[in-house]
Image (cartoon, rainbow, N blue to C red):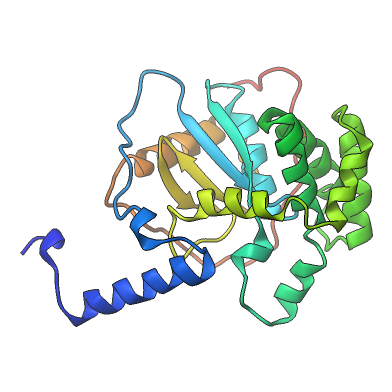
Length: 256
């Protein structure tokens, strides 16, 4: 029996669980979800990388900085998209999800930036926002998030009025669409960050600090190699320390 021929109670239960997730949590019909990775054949052009970001997530910030480091040495077709930790934890009623409810402003501002000014503007805004929020490890307040959002808009040359998106639901539908686009291919075990490489979507990599130079490139090559295997699904170990969020790009290219 091949893996494609599996039947029985276990597979039926698996289908029930995943179907319930996609219909109840992601509000998506199961007929639209893919059960196989899209083609991940390596191409001769720059690798396609789609990074899905909730701006308040430190692990997403670390991965964004890692990809900035890789881009000093490799051509990347890198695109930024918005996702939401609040939506990721939708349906939960605990202190963590309530804290997220008070901190959803940056993802709304980010969605407003994408809606009116595009992905590249979001990328610029996110870099400025992250430099302010992730100057050291802490738990920022909603006021700090709003102040950093406003300062990042100014630094990115974007309209100051976009900060008001933090306090409205005007962009919530667009935020959900972007979130679902990023998380749907990952499945029920996702988190942040979400990275799509050459069409293969994963939760991760989760990095505790930003690798530099050759280390950054080797890691990217390794992640891309795993993404190119349609039967690869998971590597994991327990985190033991908070993330080292400090990162400042070096002038020019670092020595190799």
